[in-house]
Length: 231
Image 1 (cartoon, rainbow, N blue to C red):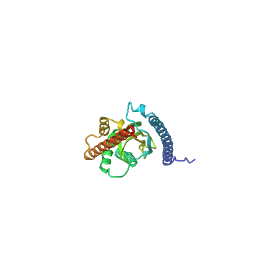
Image 2 (tube, rainbow, N blue to C red):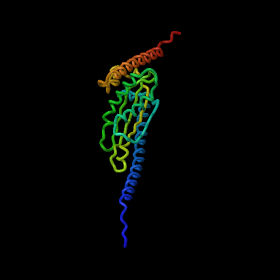
Image 3 (cartoon, one colour):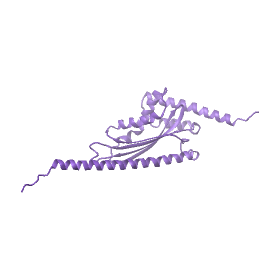
Image 4 (spheres, rainbow, N blue to C red):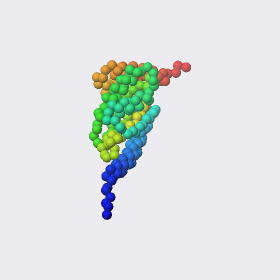
């Protein structure tokens, strides 16, 4: 009686396909979890906007959300710089496109420096980071809040193609310059600057100029609105 020789190659292919299918299912679950976390974060920020006066006692508040941007993507690169560029470009796309090329490059350097450690962390599992930055859009001081989540994956069916899952949500809000002391402002724009060359210096100088102008304009408007009516 003849015996059938097992098709080892076919068995391995079936096992690989099953692992890949499970990996895709797991990926979908992780994406949904990440969006749920972003929904929660968005609610938390909206609560702060609703209680701006109270929040101002302990931190620099944004007055209200102007724009939200979120993204969840599968990582296919081992290079953190690739991820950083993608995230930072999302920051910069929010702003305008006028004559601030040098300051934009400086801001990009600052943000990249702040996110570098998080993006380079290759430990398996879930990680998260939350930061905010001060920038200027249309000659207005704005606060840019960002929340990042990352899952580094090392399981069969995933590691051959995908490195993990990276997601972030960004919120842009206007800051009242009169609520921001000069010392606070200098600290916030310099916190992650380090010694990163002329572009960063251009960014800091540009921000100081915008801050001084915006603050003085706001104070002048306040004086005008409270001036006695001589009629």
